[in-house]
Image (tube, rainbow, N blue to C red; front, side, top):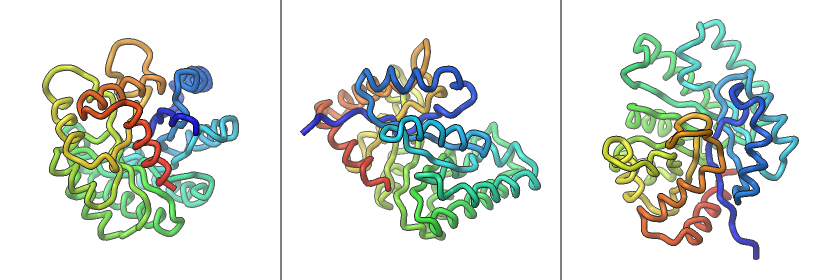
Length: 260
């Protein structure tokens, strides 16, 4: 039996910033031992780039189409309706639906929170109708997002990407059967949000864990931030949890296999 690979459970290789690097990044990560890439979708203009990458790397890339909370905030109501129509047309081409969710961080526009909630609900209903796993972006709104998921009852695998909530919120998601994906914050030294994430990491079952880079965003050290660096996230988690790296790879690979 071959050794399980490392998995980047959330990255943005279809982002326009990665246009000239995406294929190189995949090959470099693959050479380092990363064998799966779960792409996060934010708006229609990059869903098609995801499909191109999957066609080129069919055994490596998994796609996810969604309307990100920041996209909801940025677009007009008319443009959002068009975006949702496009999502309805294209969702059968995707492996999952997302990123969708709620972001009530202090820098976000509270005048658009109701729009965030509406399009989150509509995307939850779409995931339920098409039996698509959900990829969630949730910031400062975990209780509200959990309420919305429970109301919708999609009964599909759920990934809360780049989890940044409290240990209590992490446990609540885990009780709902969600997978929590931790990014490079756990690899940082020092206090603050990274310590909070480490506490949440220690507080949930290993059967709920995934790891990601969210690249090219959320760089946790200077330099190019790409999927090959997910190995450092695994290594940090191995130290924090005191679980051998080889065992952690097996656990996460098993968890990832359930997101279908």
